[in-house]
Length: 425
Ligand SMILES: Cc1cc2nc3c(=O)[nH]c(=O)nc-3n(C[C@H](O)[C@H](O)[C@H](O)COP(=O)(O)OP(=O)(O)OC[C@H]3O[C@@H](n4cnc5c(N)ncnc54)[C@H](O)[C@@H]3O)c2cc1C
Ligand code: HEM
Image (cartoon, rainbow, N blue to C red; front, side, top):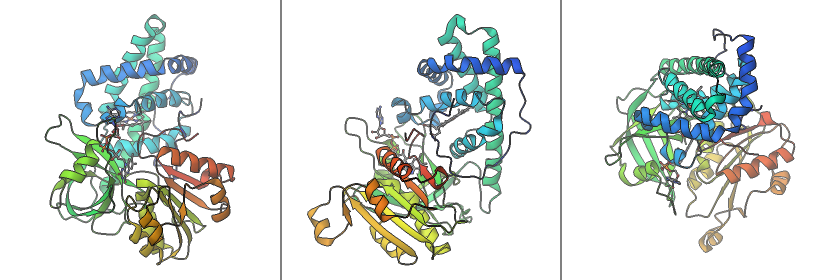
């Protein structure tokens, strides 16, 4: 069974191996492999029961999990399906290290600790038992307990290394740390940037262009804390971390909690809790082959960090910077892109799908409409070219399909989801 999503594993650098993780006997492995399809078949029911029971027993975990993702059922499937998929590789755990690494970045950024794993294990097992009833024999449950513990050990060891690395950097730390909003800058009608500086005035650790931080908010009228990820939107090496946040207004759904709080209530001088940069979606500056950075809407943020970085470190490298958005009113960081591009070998192309009269008069954009396969075929290199993209899921699906059909290989395709990982197929 393949992994449930195309995780878009980006980095070839993985932090650890599975050495030291206990091996299981062949009988147990056989039981696991033969029962994976049964668990998958009841996947949705098991995960629903699992989360219900876990949050009932451990409401404190609602301080870590994203409630909107839970309500939309977006995250539920990810955790349990990954356990089943990983179980298929129980006799070849090295094979899952790249996927574990990617998830572990998010876990580390959220502050997931070894002591959380037995809680998830207990409730996952409990849910399997509840849903399968008599069919879940003691032998099957024992085998799954062993499998879960083995997989959990891989996560725990990868994450332990990541906490160490985060702490050992110059100026590094391994949990959440207090930052002050030094500047708040409106970039468009929907996007505002926050320049964050450490409250203790220590130096800032470097990071890879494309990585994100997590912010943790305690909002007065909210019962739980809320953690969200934001990509760093400027290059490393500054005395601040910059994030650029889109205000998520719901139509029939509630307004986004954190983005609206940041826009409305978070002001210069206020403090915010931040975890150290994480993520394996980042620019490989070891390569000098052509680079194409594609973004839709607020998916612009990691591309800004990559653009700023590449012109500093590799000014000769050919770059095509493509940004698609609605119109000039929602177009953030336009002037910065133009200014930075002049420092390197960069071709900038702006797509607007609903330009205003003013946009036409001021020639604010290059192309009206969406980024298409035909346009990409005619206007960007695709042989031995690295593509990085981020944006709304339909945008990412369309770009991914276009690149695949143009023959771009998986190793040259890198992407980031601004939410739970999903499928681009
Ligand atoms: C790696 C990564 C990097 C990211 N980088 C950025 C970035 O640079 N800039 C940026 O702006 N964002 C970024 N994001 C997204 C960001 O983390 C948040 O998801 C985003 O700001 C929305 O958070 P929120 O608290 O405002 O909304 P939430 O409260 O989390 O709500 C999210 C959505 O769910 C809907 N919703 C809420 N409750 C319900 C319900 N009961 N039923 C149905 N729908 C509901 C809301 O209307 C809203 O549209 C990134 C995400 C990831 C994973
Ligand atoms: C072996 C066990 C585990 C597996 C296989 C697993 C898998 C996953 C996966 C696939 C994701 C989605 C990543 C993404 O969308 O980017 C995720 C996210 C997450 N995981 Fe885990 N996980 C495990 C253990 C845990 C534990 C022990 C906790 C803490 C109690 C935890 C908390 C979270 C949280 C909070 C998120 C972010 C999701 C959100 O808030 O929407 N996970 N995990």
